[in-house]
Length: 150
Image (cartoon, rainbow, N blue to C red; front, side, top):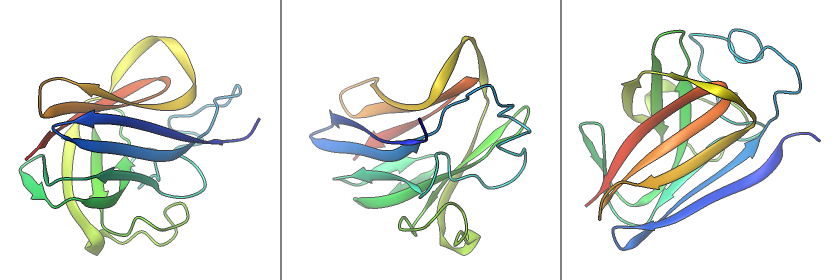
């Protein structure tokens, strides 16, 4: 089956955190450096931009962002990924992506999973009363980044 619409939702810090995305499958393909090129902006899903919606202001890296809906983009690299929150959440793939719409960027290190995650998966792992890690897993790669609700 092709990429399926998916949602991850969690209540953290007295507000909802919601991620909507399309989840592609590996289906025997070379993902990293193949289907998803290294060092290029990726929609971090399929079809349309993956959205992160948070009902309260939050910390992302060294930035404080207001409540709202954002697009999650990444720039996958072999040793380091860039995670981007972009204000233009309503777009197809990265076709309309513009760096001028970026609100914040952070660098994260990818980790290798022993088992293959066949279908792209987002998880929200609550790490404290007002904190959570957003985890992105696909194929044998896993990346995560933290947010803190204000």
